[in-house]
Length: 237
Image (cartoon, rainbow, N blue to C red; front, top):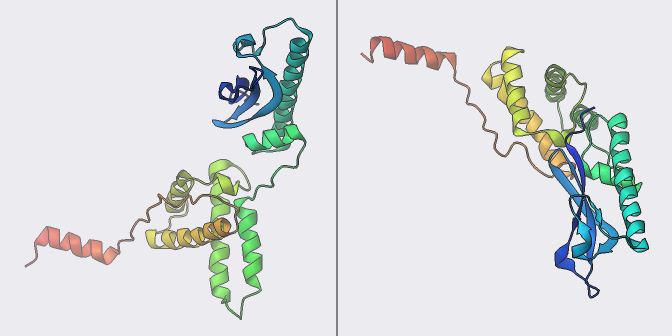
């Protein structure tokens, strides 16, 4: 288990100094480059805080008790993280914090299962607002994505909110090299996949569009390439 991307740090919020000259101690959880910071409920005089040792540098009974409580907070967060490592394949810093609080985690949607839900929903529209041939095309795209995820990530599914521009680029590469598909066919698959992403955004499943920077590669017909070659080799006469 890789744990080098996970850190717990106590930080002072000196800008929030109260009328007693004390400032709050926050706990900052960092995981995979993302931060989650919240109050611990404990306060300290700035001069008494030892940032390197992560404790209140005082021998008073209150300070000793606060140090003990901070250590308990740190240990509980660490245990929450270790527990998630065993329970889930994918989680983020917010999940660690929710686990620490004892609150239910937000259920993540996965690409294939979400696509399948969509397919099941529109299947009932066949013969009404949808043709069976159209449904089969979307179903085929779902199969292609499943094959790509297996090929790329060695998994049966992939978190929907983890889709990035690189995911789309790699998917296109997979269709070209592993499935030997032409650009026109690839563009249609991407277009249908993009519709699913738009639905996920509309349903607040996703809060960003991974297609924003994606650029569709134009399909060039072989006849056009042949004509260009003839013109180049023999001239326009």
